[in-house]
Length: 80
Image (cartoon, rainbow, N blue to C red; front, side, top):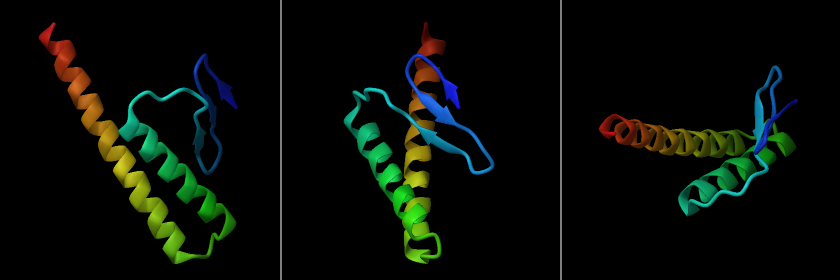
């Protein structure tokens, strides 16, 4: 378990990230919630292809959004 000032992160063979922090961006908050909910369903029903597919879609949407955010922040930093 890795604990920082704003997040608890558990890293193991299957990496699980659980953030207990306030998220102020509504889109990010929604994507985190959807990914977390989909992951919980996979844990409850690991052999369900439908739940695994929903989790993969949620992860992809979250990763794409984070990638866009990172690119935007890098662009802003270059302009300074």
